Length: 235
Image (cartoon, rainbow, N blue to C red; front, side):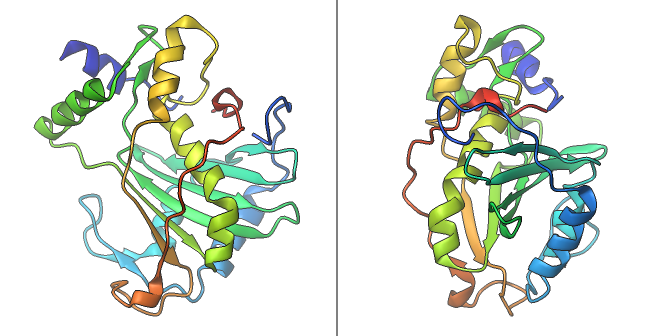
């Protein structure tokens, strides 16, 4: 499984089609204050191998935003996509989607997202079977299962902004900084659109610490092809 190991060592070092990449104007201070305000009624608590006990979800979102400034992309319609990761624990990431008025619409956490392209060896996975082999290798090394949880105030916000979070996840799989037009990247970029990582969407106003209340769960929309080029996500 040497090929898989090389890919896994790759570091995590828009707008619509044909639009240029822009950097978000949302500051780190604005991001952090928005996390607090957005999740003030979110009582969900989570647990995991990295935590000694279950913690409020707001803390987990903070953990995944330890870069100042956060990595970001601003789209032509004004939508901002921001993301980061925990220092020393890059497998714990967070993502945020803001609208054109700088209002937060989605916050999310991503755990153990694998890399399907190695910038060092300039090679990547090309098929779903390759991806399943990668997951098997990760399990043999006791690496956690890939998972994403998103939070929004309403189903309407999810229906409108989910596609941007989904596109961020695809860029995440290829390690960001992609060059999908090059032969070396092309197959892995195409594979990123096929990979299905478990995604759960919760209400940011969930009063249940365990999230078992049916009202805490929002519907995952049908995935639609995004016109935001993967190459626009730079890290």
